[in-house]
Image (tube, rainbow, N blue to C red; front, side, top):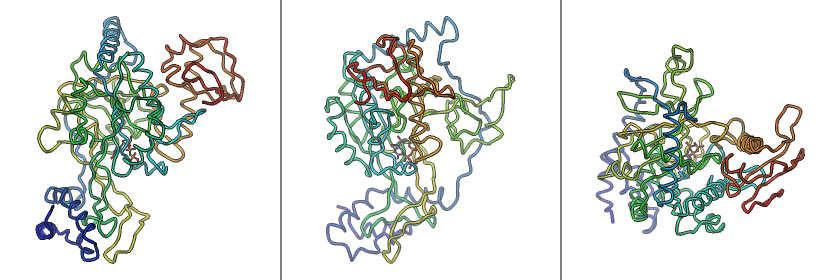
Length: 482
Ligand code: UTP
């Protein structure tokens, strides 16, 4: 166990000895826990971060050598591409049939903007059956596994704030039909919250205030949790990465997987055309010859608004946090002690106790949170593939309680996609006065997880009436509820 004298000296050396301010009030257990928590922090390195991110604020530098990244179109543009996409789908399906693909969702975030009490994966997100996000993904994974004839293991990144609840939720729901052997939760790391004066905050007398270390924390967490080894043992070579807040994501996409593999890419990404130059999505660029994502907040406005010869936005490809990572790439990046993704700073309101032990709930940001972002791994990859997708098919995140990117916008988008699939299959839909679908429709991924799949299964003479709640369920049942 860590030694109090040693810890006190180290804390004094970096001006953080206030963390022991309530030492004498703690019982032995409390003292041990606090020492252990402090001992896991690299105090000397943290001091450097405080100087870099708190004492001053890093100013983003616009690189000199920056060009838009090459993006493969959603649909092949010529015969050569048609052939490539066909081969990619075959290759993707082959990898799935060989059991070489894993699904991986990052679900360790705090979800403060949504303000939902519980892991975001347990949030009811679908229009008719009100399925939680985890169920939507589980059903997609099951559908893809059945097609492949091989189970697709599912790795779920949790964090200290929701790990126990997430595991209990999955257990309570029988893993939504998946074999628990193929579902593995692993916990990401944390970073201490740093007050704006550079002092670390205490959440309680014997506990530091910490927050998850960002979705980029997946890299060390995969290694430290033994998940990379587990993948190795299962023969997994390709990781399909997505976020917990986007129920429209195609968790397993043979085309995307195949393009990644045929190009021998280490990390790939899906992109979509930004709605407007200032949309809050990372920008795919090539910086000094490396594919990179520049955060919207770091992109100078004139560059974000710049256009090409045809008058189109130059940097139009936005990042939506859907990736393929090669296991060998993650292994390479996490070899040795440190994992080299940079930290980003965000100011947050963090609950804590003050020097007198009084609980403070600030209404304004009072602390700096340091997070790693997964897209910062892109420039570290030797090869990358970026594939365009369509917003209406694959992206509608639930971030905010209301307004843009909220549960209500996501419900609309899910219904619109289901309606588009039905329309493409020849089914007539009831419309309201504005030409919008006048029924709530939900298609279980176990019924069909693409327009093509639906067209094979649906009877085009299906009658849908205005105001109907239509659910196309797992075993082909058609009803109003699950
Ligand atoms: P967000 O950037 O939306 O953050 O995460 P958040 O913490 O969920 O929500 P806010 O900002 O507090 O409102 C995008 C994705 O990355 C995951 C989230 O769970 C979500 O799937 N994430 C984020 C993590 O897994 N760990 C983190 O530390 C941060």
